[in-house]
Length: 56
Image (cartoon, rainbow, N blue to C red; front, side):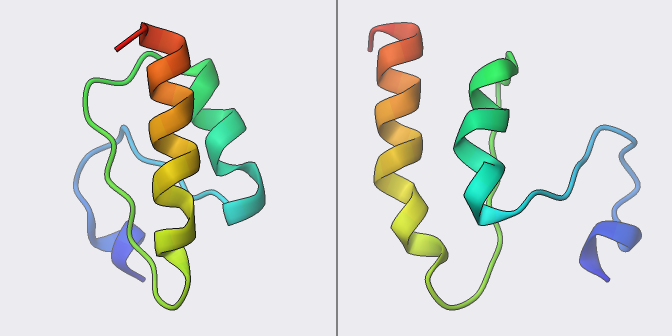
């Protein structure tokens, strides 16, 4: 529902299972995650991927 209300054409819906690998393929300047429940379990995997990818 929220994705449908966003006006940007540059958006996508992903499963938690595929999120980190999908983000790794992209050259994103901004990453926004939205979810309920255990979405916080992806914070560290996303940080690790970004650190490995950009060496920061």
